[in-house]
Length: 513
Image (tube, rainbow, N blue to C red; front, side):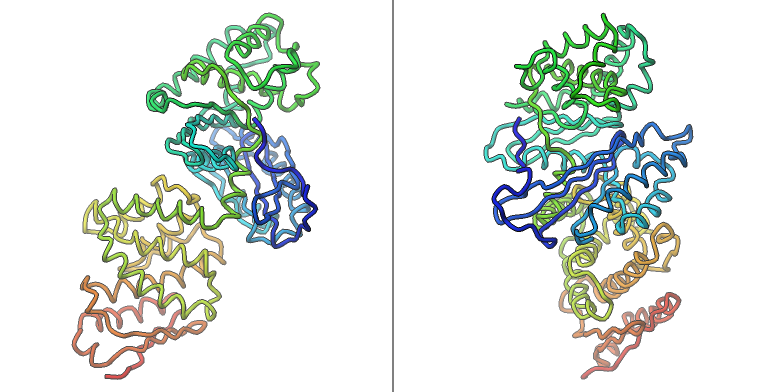
């Protein structure tokens, strides 16, 4: 399958930093970096780097990244950082996948990574990883054919079904080339039994998802990432006319390895030593996918997760659309009062606009976080009214929300947790100091907005303006209105004490009666 990204800037257009985007994919086997330039019509790939870090093989028995592996990973990021020095930080995105989802000390690694890269690692869910892979694989396609995309990584395999550029079914299964290789293969000269066990286990892992994918009736099957690209190159070394991967040729390859041993692959120059080290595990997962889904032929894409990340990064409106849909889905699923959510957001947005310059808020990122928190602040009511802010926090931390990284969800969940009642400091313990600063500013806006809309009627909200400074928040509000609404007055006065504990001084300035 042709790569839909253009390599290099073939039309001679000048590449400038403000049009350059970079994505880093911290996979379980390899770390990848891609740099692309944006033109009026498309993205052009201008650089790619890959390092076989083997993060997935560097977890100890307690699922902690070992010190040696962590240092190897940070050394890789340091090399990547040299290439990224001319790319604006807000146009770089680094995502972590299966191993960082599993690692118990991922926050420790993230803290060190921030010092190296200048940006945090966004740990994404399996379904979000699947969505981004499909975005990268189908970039530039202009048809409505049904597709099945399979991406075999080091620790997980993503299965995505979609039509045209839109993914409709997304699953991530905990099996990959590194994990399968570590569990089943031991450098045996004749790994016949090892292949049998590995394929059987992989088929067992996919059994629950197979029926839904078979109903999709895809027109084209596409594979992406290292294992599948390596498999195609291996097949081409035996048959130069091989295009893509057929079930027949894959079966013959595995039979050849079982009969002659893994050494049969040693002379293949197009597959590096680091890939050969995990290829048997990868081939077993690939064979299981072919058998489970009755795949006859698979095209091979040279675009995958990192390209999908760049597309999302360069096309803010696309990513924003995905996040809005995720919020709407949560509202529907948990029967949120959307009118109340809209009222709260309208007030919060008004306050946000007057606070941007004084509090140095990001008009895109911070606004989007506040918007999501406003629209989902009552999501916990579907569980119970008592302590619903705590129920909401739990749902938002653990829900699968496309377009959001785990970091994003935890930030919004913390806002929802503290939008009412006593502020729980533990909600921000894992945040960096810079994140805590923006968190408390947005929390002030959310708390005040929900407070003004407790009666749940549009007409009951007073004319109020906000004048923030570094630590003082002046609310200009009608004295007459406050006199007629003693409950709101009491809550505002209580808020003065609550916010003062976090360095904010709320002042009620009497307005025109």
